[in-house]
Structure formats: structure tokens, C-alpha cells
Length: 111
Image 1 (tube, helix red, strand yellow):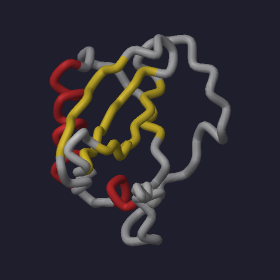
Image 2 (tube, one colour):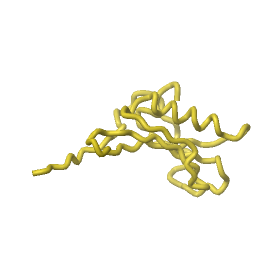
Image 3 (spheres, helix red, strand yellow):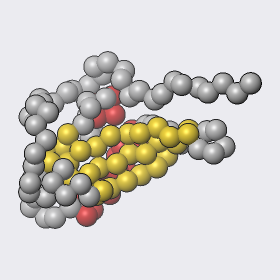
Image 4 (cartoon, helix red, strand yellow):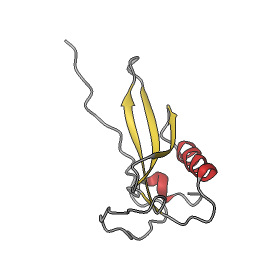
């Protein structure tokens, strides 16, 4: 009998760092590109039954993927590589709000 593991990845580890104020207050209606960036980590099961973690940053206005990284570990390095990729391609002088779920990854001082 095949039993599926229904447990899923959760980045919640409580308050381990600094949380930023919720500027958007769940009002997601940006129309100007690069003003609001959303980011999250998603857990996916591979065909070999191992887990992989995808870190993505998307633009709210255009829904375009601006940065993406994949790893076998949901760690700080994955998050920082994604942020570095975004910064390398971000228009100069642009200011934006980065909206996250405030999980432990995003409470790190470096982030």
C-alpha cells in the first residue's frame, strides 16, 4: 500500500529576528512595475521522492518572475541568492516594497 506523506514545508519558526510593518495590509493593487515585489519559498517533491525548494520573487503589477532559485535546502543561502539575482537585474534608482510572509528567512539581519 502506498501512503502519501501529507506534511508540507513551513518556514514558521516564530519571531527569531526583526519583522517589518505590513505596509500593504493585504491590498494588492500595484499598477506600476517594480513598486511591489512578492517573495516566497515553495516546497516541491521531485520524482525521486526528495524535496526541492523554490524561492521566487515576482512583480505585483506585471506578475512577471524577476528572480528564481532552486535548492535542496530551504536556508538563508537560497533566499539571499534570490535577492542577489533580483538586485542584479533591478532598474537603477527604483524603490519598492518587498512583501513576504515574514517567515524566519525574511527576519534575518542580512535580508
